[in-house]
Length: 493
Ligand SMILES: Cc1cc2nc3c(=O)[nH]c(=O)nc-3n(C[C@H](O)[C@H](O)[C@H](O)COP(=O)(O)OP(=O)(O)OC[C@H]3O[C@@H](n4cnc5c(N)ncnc54)[C@H](O)[C@@H]3O)c2cc1C
Image 1: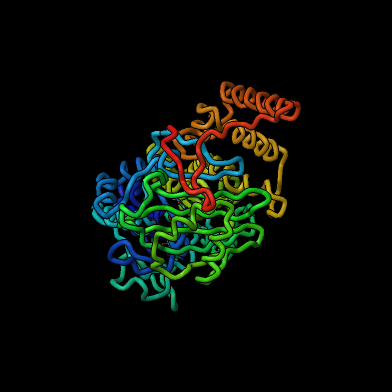
Image 2: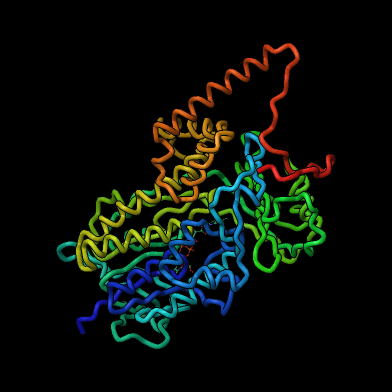
């Protein structure tokens, strides 16, 4: 027929964003997912991580809006809200409470199900795409004559319910032909096994395992009049781990005044998976801010738990094999500890990068996969360093620690200690939220400010040690309440 066809494996964020881009370069795009998609913002089996707290960074919002005009309005219509993470949200870091200020970086707060349903519904309106449910891919069809080329995917025979003009059946399998196959099947992608089955060495993997576990629960929030006036953190609170306390709690307001609480523990300090244990765990957190909030609320879900979450990077960018017609995108390429909520945004940025490669090289060019994987590795470098890299500062985390990483973590500690400098603070936030490239953390002007603060801190510590009255440092902001010491916070901006 001469019509070009692209297949995407996986209809979640990376798959839908990639499919959106391919819509502009191929005559047909088929997205295959093993799941059945719910009609609205509801849970589904194929993305177990959705049961833990998710939100979308400003950069991600812009990317999805560009791909799917009307995305933001639709999300708001369905109940999403915006907040400023440094102004409306209380964050307890190892160094203390984050100073409160307006960053101007809005964060789209909604359940992952809601965000995904908006992207999916807008995707379905595209002219050349087809989103097929209950369509599990079980292998890659690879031609090995000359330069190896991926020519399609293998599915169980009969799984493409309405049949397909470009499929061929053999035994209990069927091959669906394509000019380009995109693996967007997530962190647990089986592409490495499929490549091995076709006689190719899969790409090297880096796994950084902080032995983490997650448990989450939904709550119904109180009516507004029950929320204390001086609890300014109306959008939520986040307690981050520190070396002597390896647990985190992230509690966020979502649509329809529902709240989502995710507890995480590292080095096998897994949070409980039962309701009684979950409640007891919240009471033992190092700040009582979260338990105080839950006491105003009603639990409305069971506790959902997950322990299979690791940082994982598949190095397609330095893969020795050549395989034309196949690319990996999103979590199937690189997945990490979600400490900065970057995964859905990085998936969309990678899809934008795919567009750039397709514009430059065209869809039929053999070098497309290699070029794209190199570009994608650059995008994923910053998120990886801020998640897997930071996990590696803990001695129990399994993984290699090159000197560059140790230096980076020391620098990051200094940045954390320099948080009273608004320029440094803002820079870290912008890099973490992917509105600036990772390298901007190392601009000379920023490094000088971090250095100056480090010296000032050292001098202040010495002054403290030698001062006769031991004058105490004034904290940068009034902290959220302790239960023993009821809230007395006023706006500190
Ligand atoms: C606890 C936790 C919290 C997180 N919080 C955030 C956050 O706040 N913000 C953020 O941006 N990111 C967050 N993330 C990361 C985010 O969930 C992922 O980065 C994102 O889902 C990646 O999208 P994806 O499309 O690559 O993969 P996935 O979302 O995992 O989707 C993979 C899709 O492929 C399908 N599939 C799998 N195998 C097959 C197959 N063989 N055939 C057909 N279909 C298949 C699945 O059904 C699924 O639909 C978090 C992650 C975790 C673990």
